Length: 92
Image 1 (cartoon, one colour):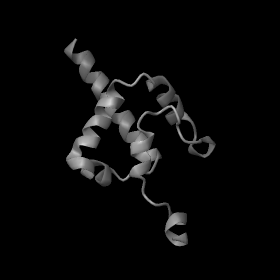
Image 2 (cartoon, rainbow, N blue to C red):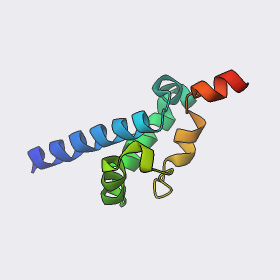
Image 3 (cartoon, rainbow, N blue to C red):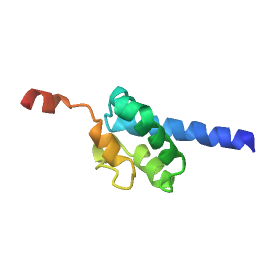
């Protein structure tokens, strides 16, 4: 049973990182929020999320075909930590 939990946690960590990469989340900003409490809660939320199937399907789609993953319970956190895109930097 211990191995099974280890694999689950490993897959969740990879999925969380892929989601953050795809959404252009500033990981340093996320880790610094409330002295790491927000990141710790995000990991836990992701680990026990009931939307993992939708998440995996979303991550498997080409980036050009995607809209934001509204199913993700962490979208507010991710949006708060998104890096400015090239377009946003040049316009601002």
